[in-house]
Amino acid sequence: MSAVIFPAHPEQILKGLGKLWTSLGQEEKQQGKPTVLRACAMTLLVATDEADNGFEASQIISELMREHPSRGIVLAVSAEAERGMEARVLAQCWKPFGKAQQICCEQIEITAKPEVWPNIGPTLVGLIAADLPAILWCRHQGALHKDASEEAKAGLEAVVSLVQKVIIDSNGMDVQDARELITKWQKQGRIVADLEWTRLTPWREPISYVFDNESRENPFSQFHTFEIGYGDAKPPICAIYMAAWLSAPNKAKVVFKRDSEVPGIHSILMRSASETIEFFRDGKNCAILRSTNGRARKYNFREATLTSLLTEELTIVGADAAFNTALGRAEALIEYAS
Image 1 (tube, helix red, strand yellow):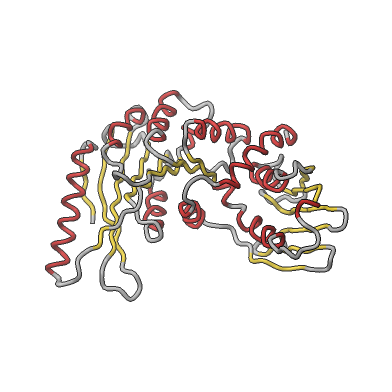
Image 2: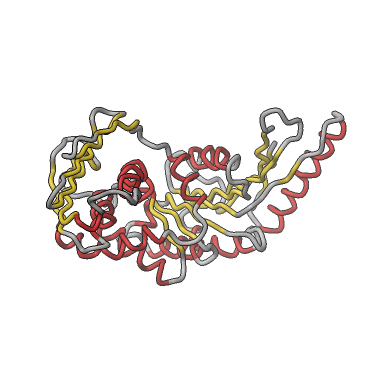
């Protein structure tokens, strides 16, 4: 159920939400069903300048609500907007398996012309759910680029100033530009997450499991060299993150090697005086981890969807210490990999 509101003034949007919930409640009573359960644990914003006017972002937000109930706000910047800034409100509802009661979250979709985007801040101030975390997932590539216009940057900074956490996807971005952007926001007191780091979970978890064994004779501290194989023209940010995570504790030696035509990380080689561990992709959906001590194991290795990546990131409360440590080490590795 949705209602169109013109123009996108905060008081009108909130009034539209109120009418939406009233209508849902009356509908439930008329049908003799249990009342609607209104759920909200955060405000989840997504800023996008994609050609679909926020359609994909809106679909992903609605999927995320089942794991992370929120007030979803989609901010689409488009020259095709009929007015300077327009909005509509929706209720995303579902029934948990075996339950009769509906759980509903509210979603606000705002479309703004590029020239109006810098003025988005005052509209959002009244829409952030009070006393709850506010998180921004930024897909506005035009504003993320270092050569973005001042208007695009101003709009993005206005949104960032209202949230506690920012999630970006640095895949395809210049490595140094991504690091500088993340560092800038961290200095402003924001928690920053990068989905390129989140994509490393299938690599990091098996390695962590190997060394979490307290009875292991050859501890992680004995590994002096890490070789990261990749398929891009130069080391991508995911390879630098991986190398930084592995080498940060002991400032170990890092080697980057192009060993594939497939973008992203293809292999990891870990060397110590008495053991070599190799972890590599074996086909599209499989990875093998094996050691010179004779042990080997296969892992399912499918590319994660944006929904699954965001679900993982939204589960993390507070700053990700492992990511921040890797980011600090990455600065030196970026210069080495250049």
